[in-house]
Image (cartoon, rainbow, N blue to C red; front, side):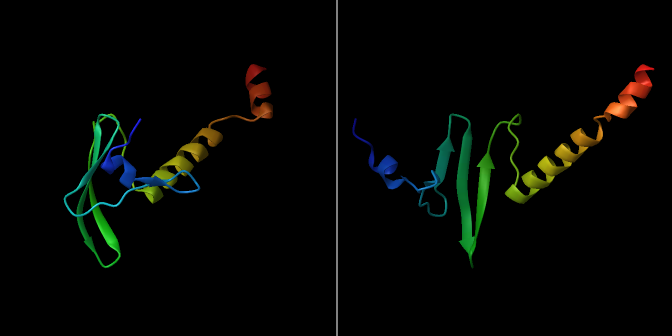
Amino acid sequence: MRRSAAAAAARRTEHGLLVFTRKKGESLIIGNEIEVTILSTSAGSVKVGITAPRHISVHRHEVYEAIRRENLAASRSQIPSADILKKLMG
């Protein structure tokens, strides 16, 4: 099966990261529902716009990691110790 020129332009790194080169105004489509558009580039940063259904969470990585840590801490704090369970069970 022959790949299109656009598909051939993407490459995978040794860690499996899919790498694309895009210019301002160009987009990537992920699945059938997510579009990532390059809005602007300047001095080492890229402004990205994402169109996705409301049921799909979209976060910056550092925000996602903070949420994950908070959820993990909350789940651990709600698990009673064996001693507490024994006392509750009488």
